[in-house]
Image 1: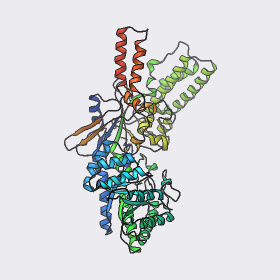
Image 2: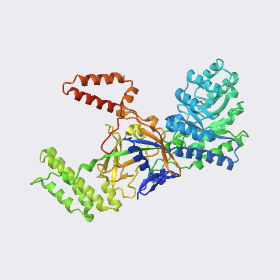
Image 3: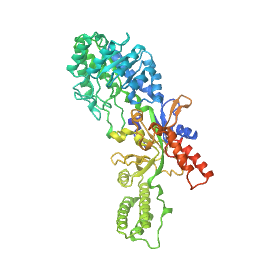
Length: 609
């Protein structure tokens, strides 16, 4: 049984039981059973499943690890976290997050006007709100309104112009004021794809000179007591712990220096995000070199050490780490529509009375192949196919000969794979040459944009047949008309899938750890949109499918692009009505069909799938 690296990336959230991927919680339902239930209710195409208990687990893990570290090191500062809405703003996630985080005083972080208004509407009472990113006067004013509503809000300053705007706005607003944070531009840099988020040349933050100027501005305008937090960020997905340690020492010393300058209400350091998620399915590609426990211990120990050295107050610790909270809660499930070589069957051979010699030799290879010669015969068949293709280009063989060569080569490959069985080295040698292409009913650009843009890997595995040996090394094609819409075959870390006849049986793949960034970054390439989603609540006895949100219809999608959908409908109606190729009864039938198509989503619908 192949486990698809579930012990590497799964974090004990999923298990394989009776050949199926099951959610490792309470009743332990099989994901495939949940999918079949949804499909029986008429939901087709890709499905996004949300598991709230996995959100709760991550919140508990973060707060639990930091509180244990605080206890172990007798740390006097407090701990809190805020979730950055940019990671996933979808209500199916955010509403569950707020509800599950209430007992922890878990807050929200906003980076835009829209996100701040969401935070003001949904954040738990007294839980912190932080506002990062560039701000204009309007956004700052909204921050003041949040304070006037009673929210515990901190506006993190990215530039002195923002601080100057706050100083002006204070004179115009009512008494309650937001807290002020200063984002510091550290010399310590991050690591990995997002390393440029940190370091002295990063996009955000104040230099040492600007920090001094900011404190002086706050003093002059009697706002120093509002200054409560400094913030830094090394980048998303920090895969090594060393850069964080260096940054903590630098930030800790900046904190104590600013307090020496009179900022006595400065009591918190916000580490930003970056707590990494292990996405790899393969041991040789594991990226994170630390655990959550090590992360929490290092943060607490280093900040305590700096404070003790400087005889100063141990700061309250804030983190964001939205990727860590969100990634594992969502699973995309998509059906396989077609296997590339499935059309190559013996029944489709069009052998002649007199075939070219190479075709006869291919047929003999197919009929006489056995385990002892499987690899040799496969290599011979590939050479024969190349020769036939050359002869076809030169006009010496016809299209039927070319078709026969393609069919026989694929049939030989399938037989060779079956005959070699557990001879892994030989099998891998074959798979590099005869990989299978699986056409899957999803858009990679919509559901896994970081794979396309950053080559960020995501765990992929079939949801069933896991008690059978997968024999086909796979490339996965999405349904967009773009050659980049592919998870390519890797000879170093091949993905093996099952040789299923999808005309007789549905075959589903699960794409895991896609809950962070993928939904909000998803592109409407070819106008494929966010798939139908459902929230799955699980208890000891059963599971419950809740909050189903169907994928947008084609009309809604067009409207989002600012098309006048009434105009679109009118034009279609007019052109059908004026058609001379069909009669009035047929026109009514066609109009009814178009109405149904326009009000359905754009994903593919084939028989059984």
